[in-house]
Image (cartoon, rainbow, N blue to C red):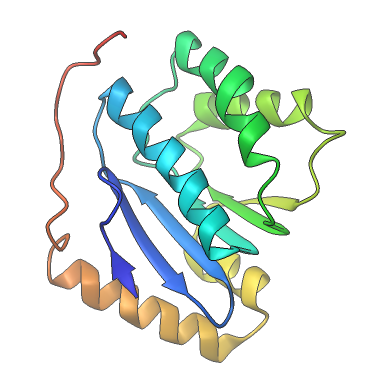
Length: 164
């Protein structure tokens, strides 16, 4: 099921697999980023998410003040999630954000219980998460159908970055 119940995020959930796929769709609004990230952690906790795929290619470069917030506020909460497999999708053009994310993960490496993998495309990432070509095909078909019908009410936000 695809939803936009968290502003700035497109979510795809498979309850049977306890899988949550997330794509950033919120432009450059720092407050929206923090709000959506907090809601995502709550949502994943409520759902008992075991597998998560984060598509972060559309995420703008993470500024230093958001990196600090991530390391002091969000990641300590996120580490308590039941997630056992986490995939981050970042293309080769997103080197800065990959470096930021790897640095944050290194900070918490002794506390991380999930197996974390980086991919550049969704198909192999979903295959790693599900181990099922049939599940990959079903998830990708649903995602493609959603994409062909627009964002289902989620709008691109093209704002200047606002400091807190």
